[in-house]
Length: 228
Image 1 (cartoon, one colour):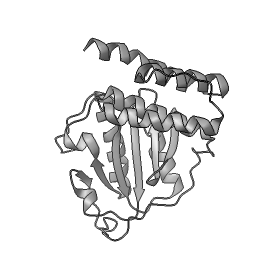
Image 2: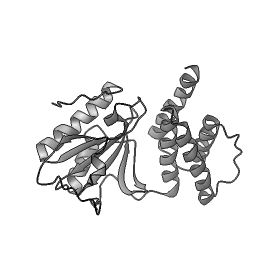
Image 3: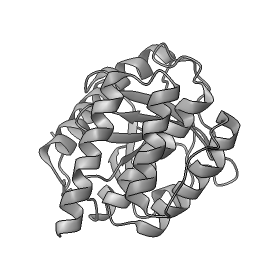
């Protein structure tokens, strides 16, 4: 079991971290927790930022992905390139960074949950991410990447990171041009605009029903946010 004081915003966060921790421990991987959860500032909408180091092949990554069930959404970050983004049905959202090396900066404001001397390699000159192929991740169309930004913007907004949420909203609006979506009218209200864009994506593309449920549950939280 974990011997660290982590302020989990819900029991689901605890379950996820513990499941990955046990897997990494059994396989001799190093594991570092970063972000708001490591700083004790996470909300129930915050994502989980993890770095995992070790002799990790595609099969092992697929196992890590499915430890908590099958993700509803899965993709890679573009900048920096190559971090896995996992979103599960209960809105547990994970940035999973599979590495060969870390830097001293990675260790700032972080918690080293597991450290194996054979793979805990610090290199301040170059961050090396594992280049792997995953059974869970097909090639994603451009609209799916916009959907990922929609989700990220929404959880930022619900976590009261309003400036970041509006920055993502502007990025999303710019991305719509490449999807040939130019007929939407916006009022520059985050909640209205994000729902308008999501509805349009559902109309124009084959958005999975589980993803629709995920977003509709998040949109219900807008009303609760306004009350408080």
